Length: 235
Image (cartoon, rainbow, N blue to C red; front, side):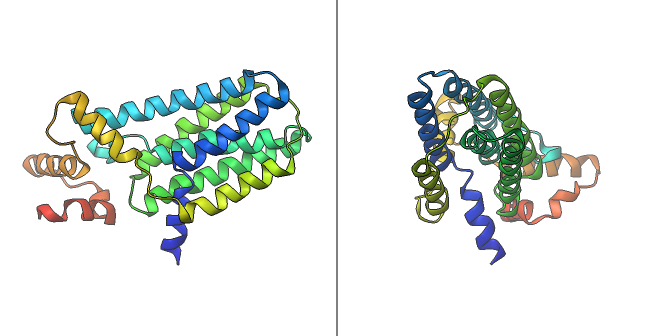
């Protein structure tokens, strides 16, 4: 049951689920306010965070740039997107309410994003360091957007709220697997000229051999299920 919970929750961090919700909200903002500023600022902050996230992944897959002591292979996109989108989205939907409601909406969005970030660790998709950096980057993007977008105090129609709620509740269980990971790997190979992308298990193998050669103990995370699953074929 717990495994199913984390697997469903983690899907809320997928770009294919979050970005359409963000886009619909931005379109409503522009059409209702007749000013694109809020949507452009929010989109720009999220795009900048997404670019940085992609760069770290491409650097690892294509050029072996990671940090083995923290089991870091690149920023978690799920953690970043959920934190960049959800707090701002909920804040926009209560923009016509008082400051307390607005602050509560942001807090709920941050808390939900934190759970999604942690779910990446629970489903063995990312190390704690990768999830934490993704959460921090997304939070920075969300705070920058909230500060710069000056969301107009518009009343969100029930149709928009209901549509977004239905989308976020139903798509995690029914949407096809996200192709973004494989796309980034293909991009990395194309840019670097490698025959195949560098993988986490390769980094862990090399790091383990280096530590063993120096007579140093393995980090505690080497006994965890994520690492054991990655390096077991090499035993």
